Amino acid sequence: MRTIIHQRPAKVADKNSSTMLKDFFIEVGLITTFAGHFFKELFKPPFEFKETFKQCFMVGNKSLLLVGLSGFIMGIVLTIQSRPGLELMGATSWLPGMDAQGIVREMGPAITCLICAGKVGSGIGAELASMRVSEQIDAMEVSGTKPFKYLVVTRVVATTLMIPLLVIVSDFISLIGAFFACNLKDSVSMPLFISEVFASIGFLDLFSATIKTVFFGFAIGLIGCYEGYNSSKGTEGVGKAANSAVVIGSLLVFILDMIAVQITSFFQ
Image (cartoon, rainbow, N blue to C red):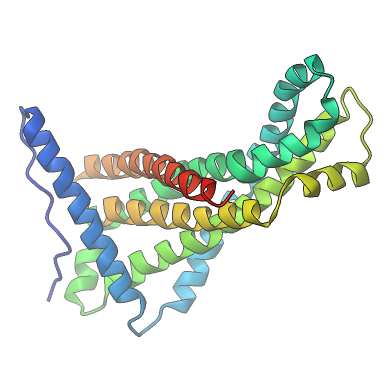
């Protein structure tokens, strides 16, 4: 028997502000219900370990090149843009430490997760929407299998686990890019650069940056699955699902980042 996760509100041609606000809160409620169903199914056997590992490979390995290249460019750009201001104060020796703080605390997690929201989130949304349009999900429901467990839980777990790892890789490659950029005008040895980097960041910086990327990964995977799993019929629904997954996922990354910064500031 088919389980209905939710039903989207009917779209109206002319909407006033109160109707749009109502639809917004309905959508928030439906996403919350979808998340609750995810946690309910997460701890229920059977556990799809094989599919989860497959999705981890798809999320991590397929995004590694893009994330690494973006991180390397980010480190170079941040260093080049920061140098003129530090030169005015005669403080170019602070450049490695400032790069480390900017990359590890904020730029690395935020930019990498936005890239993943565009690549991974849209891919999940389009894939599940295509399965919904081609009635593959309906066929799984009719046959007695649990498509939510197989399709949604595995993908959300994969993004929650792999995106923090991608951020760590991106931070490391960004610091390599920053090292090369530092040596464009100055001569900075690798041991000195590493020493300055570790002197400028502490355990709280690493811990808070890692924890918030777990929530970023969860939000990206959840929104991608939500939009794809509940997409409308027709090929137009596939495009809308992919677009909504990117837009809402990116917005949630900014909102969660703002909350994480406020929480971290209390412990500094």
